[in-house]
Image (cartoon, rainbow, N blue to C red; front, side):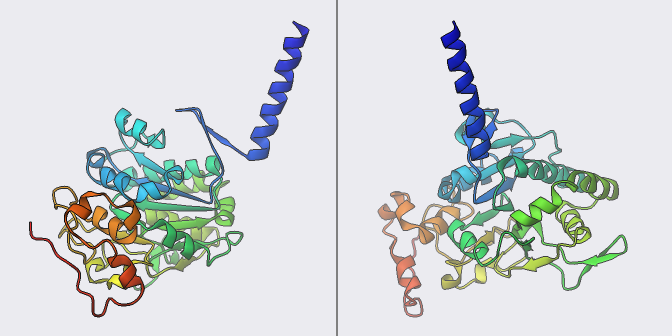
Length: 315
């Protein structure tokens, strides 16, 4: 009996030491340890998009860094939760696009950050395609030990709010915060967010920008974080390769200027087409059956795009 107690004691001491040393967050939903990440990406979504937009993300850019990506939604989906291996956060937030519902989801996203302790945190919407390597290359230009609030503004002038004038990053183009910025905001974010987002009814991205300004963290603009307000369909093909975040525009189905590599019914947002263009080795074999040249990417990378004509397929 004494031997068993001694072994149990040694095991407990070792376990505590391991958790402290590794700074590991245990996901209570699946009991799997998640190591601190270089980058944490949260995707804001809603139940009606689980089988459409989230499926397209799962089949494409999610596969580039599955351990780094969490989905924040407004309804529990056991199938999706299992598919994502527990990286699905169900909230009690509303499903509409009003400031309170959006702010509620962003609040849940921010609560996740200190549990993961990433070097960088990025927020995106479910109509965004994230080129993970390009995003990391972009963030590598900034020192995470400095408080950075990175994104793309949608306004031509600073926004006036409660007596302050500030630039804010639009959520639809992606927003990234450095480790130092997270450290500054973490002790205050809940009270500040409830005060300004809830009381004043600010949209989530505006409220975050307002809070960053209160904390003395000014927005750093990255012009190739692209939202639905940008003409992504006019983007030159060689520029797509180095663009970290692109956005699909639902109103007119506008996205990258590439021919459909798949049937539009299977690839309504061209996410799979773009993914095959950027990462041919991850491309679905169906693409080869269509006779599309998967080496287009390499030819464009070598700047032969001026004379190269992309193949098309008639449906």
